Picture 1 (cartoon, one colour):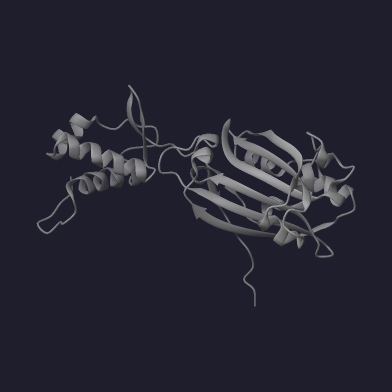
Picture 2 (picture 1 turned 45 degrees about the vertical axis):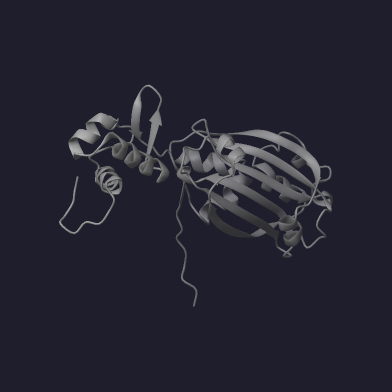
Length: 256
């Protein structure tokens, strides 16, 4: 354990910081089993209670997980990188590729989704505001859970005005090649612009269960609004993304 004559950190923080440094420098790699509590206590000349508190701190920081009967392990992070602007390239969905599938496959991952609900529903305030309609106006929603490498990574709810999706495959379980974006264009809405709003927070209990989140893992709230060439919003998606399964990458020209 690293320390000094004026180190005012509590003992459990010192032990946790020492382990965190070893994780960050590669001494302990993702998936590695950490020393037992007894070993940590002995190696750091602290009590068993202090060693346990140190591990609890690392769990809260999302760095380790404990598997009952097996020990404590450095968390693995099977994240899929989201290539900001490029992920929405028209060439992808116009050629029949779903956005998530194309992006995940290019990075060596598998992708899938489970449909949770397909229904007419009152527009929540955040959706109504972007569609510029009264809150509670009936809209169409597709609720689904997306998966990367068989682990849930996102709860995604896409909303559409009823007049936009009436008679399209967006109202069916299978939206067909290219997904909802392709079906919107088939219906005459030429997609032109996307606005994304991001926020980080801790998950609710149901979100933690649905996304199988280890303790201490935050989620990303994404609100995406898709506009056609006339400036009309034609889709609003509210997504909750597992914070340990996403990396954002952006490259763009600097505006004048």
